[in-house]
Image (cartoon, rainbow, N blue to C red):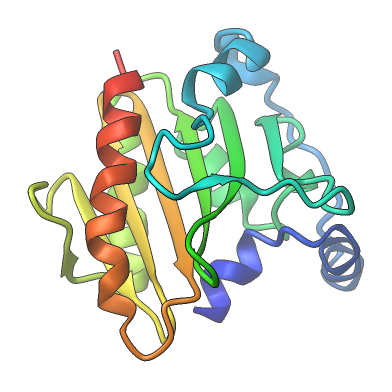
Length: 195
């Protein structure tokens, strides 16, 4: 759990401190690889309040990172330096959205454009191998979506066409598997936006 949440820090101060300690504030030499408009990409995948029953975007005014869209050139502004794993596999755009569900459940939704099916699948295969994820996310085949069960939640990795997704669920206490059916709902909503 620490590895996954560490890479996707949502607290700006903590993220800044980690990046400073690791020297991860360098940019990328890529320039968005000709991907579509970042604003349009973010709006395409942004989940509306209530689109998943009981879930809404985090609205804490102190959380400046509750929603954001990043390119390969500035992804390191959101994550702690693990950005090269994504960029080297073809990530062009990334949308991050922090959601709150029934208290205390939370989810960070990550949607990424990899330009091609093969690149999105390569990222999925990389994460699947790195994390050892084995939790099925029905009705999806484990070659399309798989979860990593953590102490109080689940992180789901999925790819659909040229898009790659990570869903980071937390707040499920002693029953992290309860996040799996919710992850299915999130993936179905994201799949409907994937063309």
